[in-house]
Image (cartoon, rainbow, N blue to C red; front, side, top):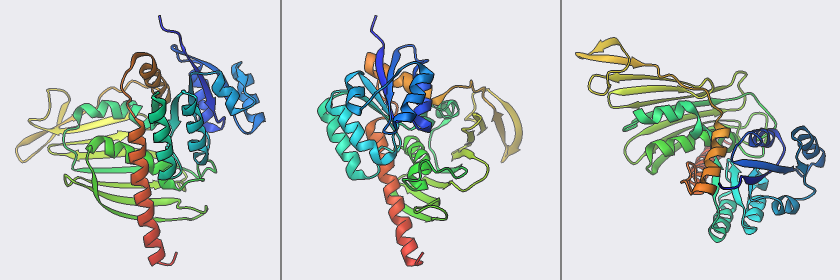
Length: 326
């Protein structure tokens, strides 16, 4: 029987704390300790979980086989590269890095290390998204809204890199094709970067994705709707929940008829979604890659593709803001 993977969490803020607590519940891993540049923060979390608070990043890396990198985005490249240079497996929170140059540094270090690297686009593990995949055939229109109250954490990047990047990863996973046209708008309201943004993406197949992200909304919202020939589905990532409407010829006998259109029956399905923790599933997938050689659900290449698209959207937003002299 293979030994559990020894894991350290680097960064003990909001997400790092979640990762650390969930690692203590992963049967095929053991949390050996945590590190944060704010020593008091690491000490408090370590005491809660009865693990070690490392004095330095180097000490943390010497004590583990794998790390979760949950620092601020601006530190992702330096921490991930340090881990990879020591031959560690890396679970890297999204976005991969603050810039594409930094992401490429991580990619080069990963190629040299030959270890497992996963990216924390946790919505790929959301039960609603995973259930929806079996219905997806040929997306033609995707609409996503990701809205959140303002929180100071995450403001080292724009709302595009902080929130919209989740949906960019999802639409790239759903379409599996290049973006050929971008039209994006955004504005900074209470931070030094863009706080609310909308992007309209056109893919090579003709599929259109319309994405809105805001960190200025009192009530959080994480929804996606997908339209394709003879089918429509609505996902709520928060619940999680999935509703599916399909026309005659696309259903498999499941659901109920709710209407008729053009002589066809419209079938409604509301699949039972078992609640689950997306980050815990992310951990299990990461460990499965390390111990069993299972393929990554969200690879480093996937994370970089989402970051590249986010950078292109940000550039389009900046161009429009300059034209409007904002």
